[in-house]
Amino acid sequence: MRLIVREDAASVAEYVANYILGRIKDFGPSPTRPFVLGLPTGSSPMAVYQILAAKYKAGEVSFENVITFNMDEYVGVPRDHPQSYHSFMWNHFFSHVNCRPENVHILNGNAPDVEAGCAQFEAAIEAVGGIDLFLAGVGEDGHVAFNEPGSSLASRTRVKTLAYDTILANSRFFDNDVSQVPKMALTVGVRTVLDAREVVTIALGARKAVALQRCIENGVNHMWTLSALQLHRHSMVVADEDATLELQVKTVKVRNHRPLYLSLATLTIVSVFQIN
Ligand SMILES: N[C@@H]1[C@@H](O)[C@H](O)[C@@H](COP(=O)(O)O)O[C@@H]1O
Image 1: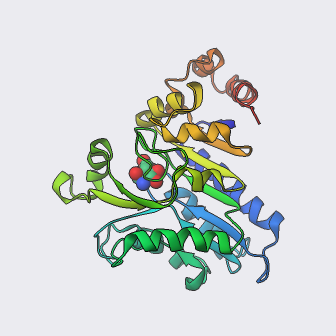
Image 2: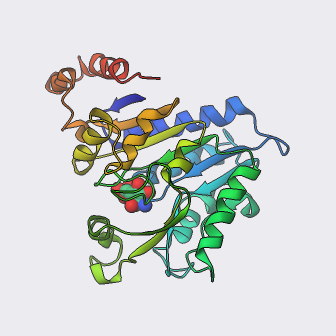
């Protein structure tokens, strides 16, 4: 795993957007060989989506031959509800780029048989040859997608009951009213994420600092599901400085001497966590 530290959220977004752009360009997607991109919702990737959309508008990238799979979706929230992940993705990304609607895959939290929908989602990923790059965020409790603490590290796409911490954290999108937050969601499993050829995770802000510390400095643990990425051959976390506040690595503590030592600290951290 590589840990890349950037000064603030804007620099993280710039780094991640350029990274994804580079991956798509290097891959050179075509109709017969599309690039398969896994995508998250949440506040963390929003600026990345804005930059990617701007680069598309500037003619720097095309999403015509990019197939997408979203990580998760609430159960029972109408598709056109402003807080459904379907609305989020179309409002923040798909409406601004040239992804073809038939190439967009978002779990349906209103399907008559959600279990069958989850199985079809896994089959659809397999049918296109797997996910080339999965972009992810991390919850305050260390979850990836909606794989709440205690999720099996071998899990696949399924229905999950949300942890109270997550319901509280997400109430900010529902008028700060916990009672309006859905209690269940559909989510890709930890194994689904691990199966991607590459995983890039964004961690922003002090409220993610404990999760980042548990997930990258402690061992692999199903109570902090993002920690499973330590086992991935090609995974990377891109964090802003605030998200590194709980990290114990001594070199991180030179943060007060920025900017002189920032890149040195970053390089050191990269090498400490280079386990693949
Ligand atoms: N299911 C999503 C996750 O995929 C996301 O990573 C997390 C963090 O969200 P944010 O980026 O807004 O902090 O929120 C939700 O729980």
